[in-house]
Image (cartoon, rainbow, N blue to C red; front, side, top):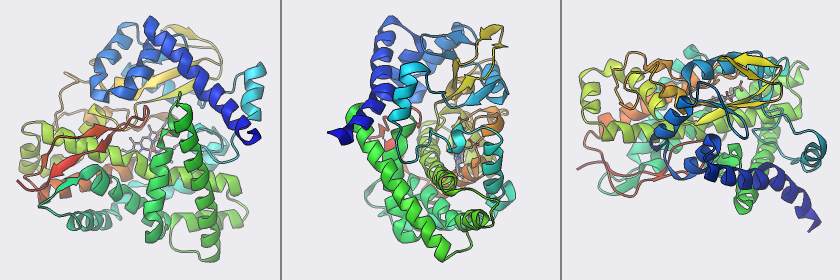
Length: 431
Ligand code: HEM
């Protein structure tokens, strides 16, 4: 029983109590709480009415738990501002002490030293070590290999049978690419994918107890696997990013052991747990929008724009948040130090002040690339160029090889609140 005391307290502080409070607030109509409740059961495209309601309350409004914005200008401003920092500061007093006492012993993407919740100078140091691998030029060198991987995955499917594209294609393409970049042996990729997928709800708040325990187990197993993998690379370095990170550490200028595992783990997991959704959401949008594929067949140069339009309309990440570092004013609203602002990325992407007729999916949209699906400011997605390239190659290879592809009934969405996409996407590849 003692072994369960810490997880039980941690669950209570970070999930159980917020979950109960949010459910009560949702019944009272609190917009953030409604977003919490509705995002678990409805796909993002069914939430756009709620984003409109948020905007109707002002470009920055105050909810029971945090400030809230679905305005493109304000989301950008907050994410780019030095008055805000990432992560949520633990509460003061008893709650803070309980959170500290019950902290997990394994790495968590929302706990330092994860890049996502670290700020300069450490953030600058971690990012500097990894960015060069993900520059546009470096990513272009991976295009040919990504095309090969996409074709190999499609070769393995039986075109006469119904296939689940989420499982057999969208999930496997990004994990294979990032695993090669990072030097994860082929035999371990399925295991990494399984652990990463099981850990995906770790970005969510308000998990029920059983799910929280499953996610904890997956995070702990992922951490153990990473430690072993890094040990292996220490003994057998290869031509990959993780071997370089390990070497940098050994030169005394790099990361300590925990920083190394956190950075490697985040790059690896972020490298597939989001792009899987870009592919799945993209297949569904292109399939369901009359004329979209015909336009791309006529003018294949539009593919990169189509990928940005998919990211705009149905983004893989619903929202993020920032904590106010000092008293400030945003959009005329005073925001005190310590307040949390929830920035709804999907809401910003549907802001009619920037995107005309925002619900319409239009592969020719001139300003599709102005979406905020990769965040903004210091934490702008490190893998944006890689994700765009994988999206373009993955979707194009699929639809060019199987122009008659037809989605069949039975598609289901993941229930994760932050990461948005399909759990199952059944299809027939040929008519
Ligand atoms: C379509 C696919 C992707 C989407 C929509 C996406 C989205 C995002 C978003 C929204 C953030 C910032 C969160 C915040 O500001 O709080 C982020 C950060 C990050 N992403 Fe991505 N991502 C994608 C693919 C990738 C890939 C392929 C990689 C791997 C190379 C990656 C690696 C990272 C890392 C390491 C960070 C942390 C950056 C930092 O905090 O400084 N992402 N991503």
